[in-house]
Image (cartoon, rainbow, N blue to C red; front, side):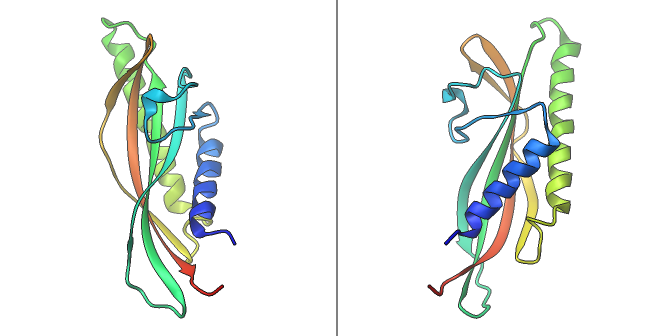
Length: 152
């Protein structure tokens, strides 16, 4: 039996890869600097985070509100004195973030009545160094509320 966690995760992955076709999926959403294949110009990762019982009753269903983290990274190819280049990477990252927010808010698969997904926020722009490469990163949080059937 597949849980809604798998369904939501797969829907997020399909949605992001479809919206951001020039991004590569990064496997470890929990420790970005440890990814072996982080050396991509643009990357994304999906992490499954905390949950709580949202206390809604519907037959033998458990209502859950779970947070999914979506991380976007872009390599900074500008040198340290190229202010316009740095700002361009940052602005592009946030433009791509908006594409994801808009797509998730409007997507019928993860906003179907059985699952309600909403953008909660992000941690702002972060700077990260991995080997010789420098990256900007933004981590978004989406709350997804759904029901899991407790019957076998």
